[in-house]
Image (cartoon, rainbow over all chains, first blue to last red; front, side, top):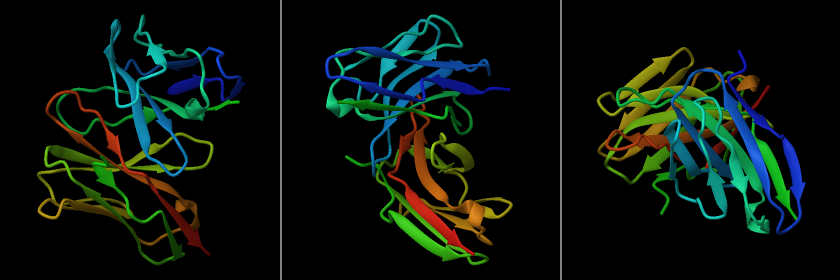
Length: 115
Length: 113
């Protein structure tokens, strides 16, 4: 029972490089999310998806892109990496719905450093 | 615009005593509140939640209290154990529209033996 799997766990990028953070979940959740956590800060929502083919911006989407071609996968693309994108990135998923608390299951995180 | 605030960055407690973690919010549309626990090098894990129609929810050693008039919630851990040492995040969501979770900045709890 893997839950939410993120790869890679660590990555160092040079300014201007691009990369994709991979995220996959095996819980058949409709909702998926990407958050970033900077030191001393809470988690900020980058992008989210309520189902395959549907994505939307969160609080801090600039410099990122996402796609959701399947229920299981929600990759996050960084174009033209900048030092401000140095952070820990968390992918999460949830069953969603309008009743009850929206409980998210998180991956272990991907630590990205841009030099 | 920090809608969910955890004003104490850290808290130290002795094993066996009570830990009280606090959280304040500003958005009156929030109707669900959640606590997540995070260990180093791991993702946050869900701990306990409370709906705005309740003022208390209990799960074993963990109790969350909600004071809607003060826009304040707290997490009580009794008795505290060394394994509870972690960062605790408060989060809130509004039922209207997409249930995006808004997170606080976290409180680092250290429980010493």
